[in-house]
Length: 190
Image (cartoon, rainbow, N blue to C red; front, side, top):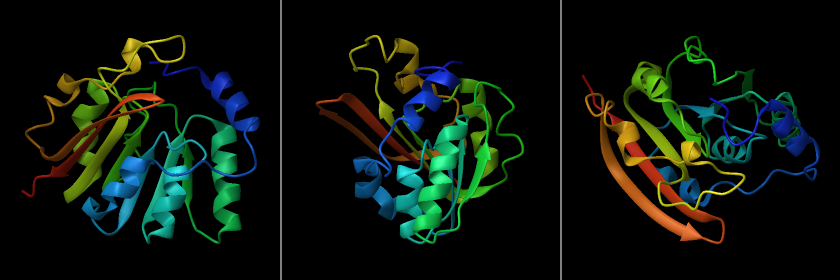
């Protein structure tokens, strides 16, 4: 699935950004207390605004993205701050892209909509009691030339993961960028 632009679009976007990361996602800052201490997989991490925030807060983070320019920038920003970060170049349009990433205490998906097939296996990548944190443009966001309907997080995206996860918090918010949703799930202990 092509999400909000192809690889060339994102490589150009990251290459032309100023020489500092954006601020971390507000919803992440406000809800970091829900995260289980330990490791985080930051899916579609971009150039690392959330990864850097998590590293600063003591988490061990692996960031994955399909943009080589984003990964290069994240590694530069992490090195400047003396953080150790694991980065992987992964194309999430490949349904098997996450097969080899391992198991984490938390998974963060910010401004990316995983396919239902990928969500079906996400539980195998989170430890018991771990957090699945999903935030992005939600179902009420106004579709435009940059953000398509297919990019919007829908309430029924998560109907198949309810066997493995409990929803512990849901937030809707709106600002000048549009309509956002935040879902915080905890993996049910077996």
